Length: 109
Image 1 (cartoon, rainbow, N blue to C red):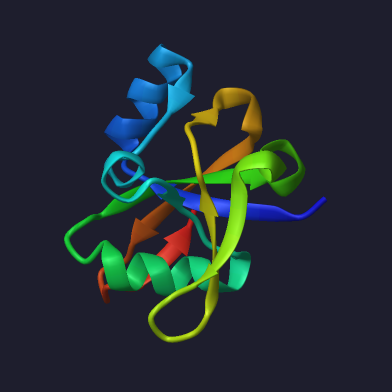
Image 2 (cartoon, rainbow, N blue to C red):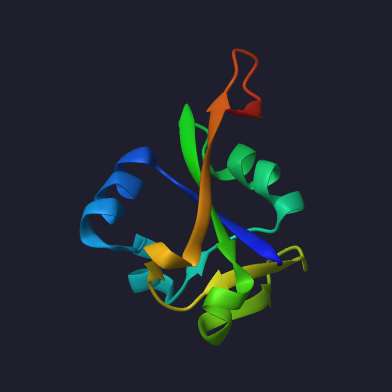
């Protein structure tokens, strides 16, 4: 089973657990939710979450979101997965935590 990953702020994930679905402001602003492959995950956290100390990693089965998943080229030509719609809780196979270390690197729980 191929997995893709979305980085969420803990508060946003807590809200999703109460609502039953996860969305992100990018869904309204850009029409999709940004995701990463496993190899893109830590560089994405390092680049886009410079002021954040912890993140929830949503592990999402490509199979469960295949109807709304597209791989699209980013500015540097790399293909990133984008989900065109809300993420249902049942789409998330697992969650893990990322924490920023004292030397500003990300580490898994």
